[in-house]
Length: 188
Image (cartoon, rainbow, N blue to C red):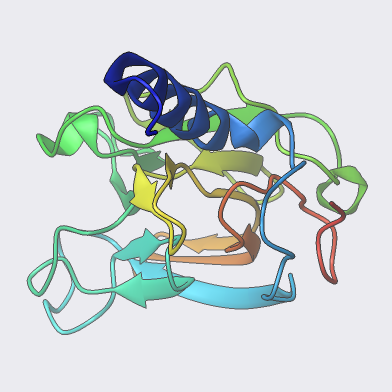
């Protein structure tokens, strides 16, 4: 005899909810498979640079991307309305309130776990050399079916206003459901 339909629906809802909120609890997640590593990246301003240069970054895949080729990114670099260098999450670029940024005072190397909040979604984040930023990605569908955000930390190494370029080091945890921001495999 099969279980009542309502029991099956309830069990499915609980399973989806537990995976969706897995970012705070890695119990039951598949073992992490992607090693966290620090990379160095350069982005060029959205305006005033060649369209062939990358001006945005996608946590999924940990890639610098060109905005003329995709809108699947989590933040872009440009100069704000008063000429200050800034990172733009997706909402100020009219791509929906999907990604968020958080400026922190903790040194880059000391950050080992991304918080679940508070991220800024609706305005650019001004930055300068030495700024450390936490990033929450747009929702990502994992191979095991849950939709979660990926997390990263970045440290601004240099801002070149003449070349309109931003250089930073970044560590992205590409393992769905994990928030570890230390080099190596995240802990379960």
